[in-house]
Image (cartoon, rainbow, N blue to C red):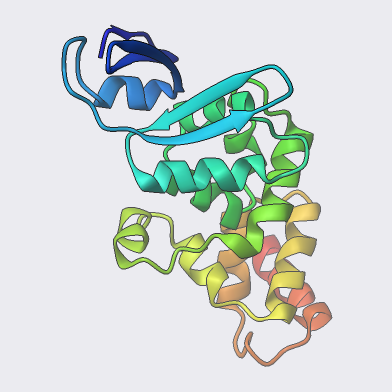
Length: 197
């Protein structure tokens, strides 16, 4: 590696210096100038430009590809997001509808964050045991993954009323027989739980 900055590096391949766009996280992980480095790359070819994007692991590359598949999210925005959040954190934010976390990245507005959540919702999951353990301090995600449609609808209604997703999930799970109730009944009983606080 001939040059390393927070958002790019230059890799020497057979005497040719190749400019590779990277995330800040990748920059911190791949080593120092003079080191032999291995990057997983994505090539973008436009009319008159050729851009390489490099990642320290395949998981980060896969998440980058998912992000740029979302309408309105270009490579620069995806790179910016992966500079402030690792791939697992992006998955968590998508599954838990955390627009605020996603919109912390430069170039990702709240509207774009909402699109990311909508378009990637069915493409990411927390089924990996190590990932579930990583977010074990946030039971909302695990509980939400187990929710049926009626429970999910009640959760969405509570969140739209201004309750946090965490307290809404806890209120729904606290309702006796929540698995068998329709969303209207569930919403009513969950609100009673929340009002009773």
